[in-house]
Length: 488
Image (cartoon, rainbow, N blue to C red; front, top):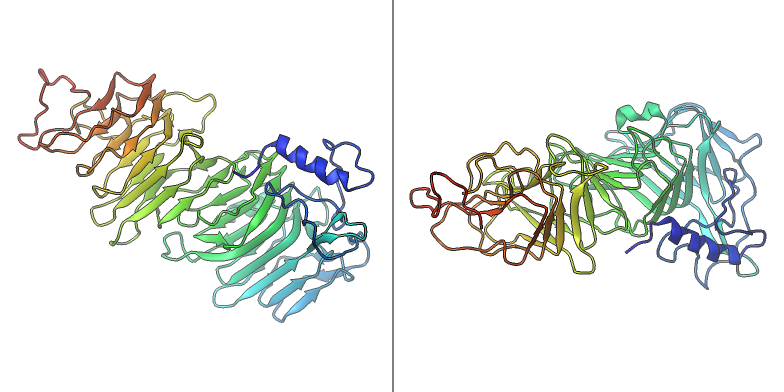
């Protein structure tokens, strides 16, 4: 599991201080001007705070944040290099990059109030390749020589590095400061804002590469990946700190279908919300994985696990240790499958040491804060929920008359698909649920079982913990008297 706590951050900072003269207190950080953070190393959570015993011998960056510099105010249509010597590179107008801009280590780019640098456009490619360096100095102490993006006036944040589906943003050992002005919100917001083809596209566009990236003091989201844009497979060690605000709170936000590429080594600290947002909507998800990255996920809307077109089932896998916090919207939670021809499979297999948690995003939390996990159209085999916690669910579902429990099917889990081949919810704790029932077994069958109660634990749940299914013969509920609930 990656480190995201402040305590872990401070311990890493302490290690960095040992190698640097003048660092008196590991708990104290000193603001550095753009382009002048030479030997400062950001915590990455997996040892990335130092380059290791081997590495190139480098000298610290000079301060490249002032001086005559170079102005950029026009569309870029031919390849060019932005040098450290030509810094600061001042962007004084919203520009579009339709070629490859290479930015040298130690270079500083300063952007004007709310201006945005857009990379690529429909039918035309563009790229920014900004690669700093890590190494050691002559004494063996670690050195970072970053590429730095900042604001011309830090009190007037710039917009974003916006990546079109035809664009590519490649950042290594880079720092982004004072971005994500409120003006960028209309397009999704973020210090980095990237777009794929469409929210319903069958393919993911991996057009943001981030390795050893620090985003700080963003006034809105840190990284916002829209329309199935995604990080590249080799992205890692992304730090977002001291960023966000009400209405644009999240350091990283992704859409269903592009979740599996959230990098390793993510560190979120001091942000308006130290969570990764999943922008669930009416769109369904491709087969995808929610990775354990040491931070909770905020699910905004209802996450639907189903293909966009008729065909094989989509599978959502959730790794052990993941926490999903559901917004208190009228349509929240998980929906597995959207039609008989667009089925879904959920594989959420935690461990005793690292359970998976489905919970409320509200504080304080209360029963019925979010809707449910709803198996509407899923195959008889393949689903798994194990070593999990499902809490504060059971909001109004709108479903009625399924199973033999209460007429209103407000429950933490609804199984309204065909009879499953096994009791795929196992060793799971249900607690503080709202509604009338814990689990609604909504299929019809004259066969016995499967038993969804034996291995699960129910604490502070409705009296009807598991409602029985109806018999296929006559749609009856054996054991019911005058329509009384039949609960297992």
